[in-house]
Length: 78
Image (cartoon, rainbow, N blue to C red; front, side, top):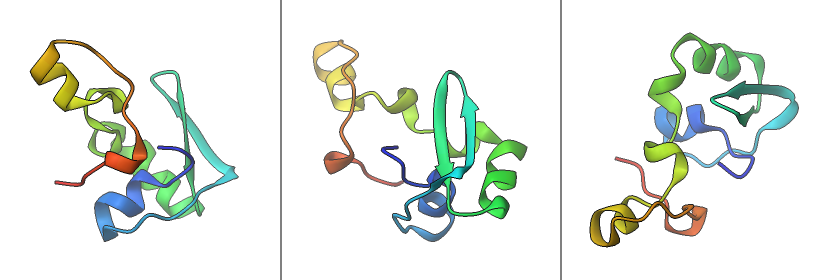
């Protein structure tokens, strides 16, 4: 997520930077949140807030059958 809060993106459709004081590790990746409330929401149901394919590009997987690391520039929220 490049330091952005996945909870804010999902719940408010806003790109909000997180801070190291409110971070959590899930599936080997560090997620940052702007406050304790967002961190608690994430920890209560992490799968709801993690990117599809762990952040890999879904288009590359569908079209080329390859796992390629995604880029925030091309991220979408559905």
